[in-house]
Image 1 (cartoon, rainbow, N blue to C red):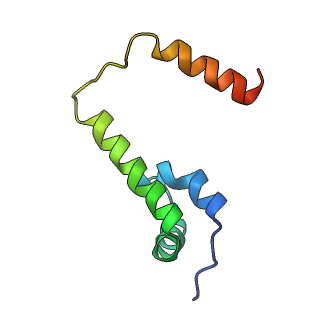
Image 2: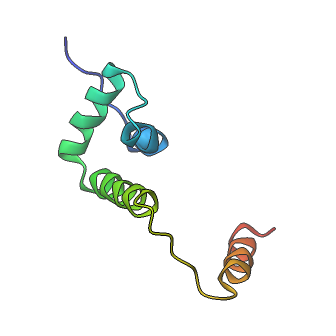
Length: 81
């Protein structure tokens, strides 16, 4: 049976579940097939895996002083909150 193509939007919506092995077999196969032909989604997958590895390795890191406030400010401007 041929796999139904999956869009980049669907892949990006599920990429963190994919990394956590929290997708069903059919969706995993569709995503794996998509990664073979989509460099952008493959890069997002690699980045997500790297972040999970960095955060999950037990070595906490601190962000620079004032970072949270600056981030909120940038997000508010971008989202026009």
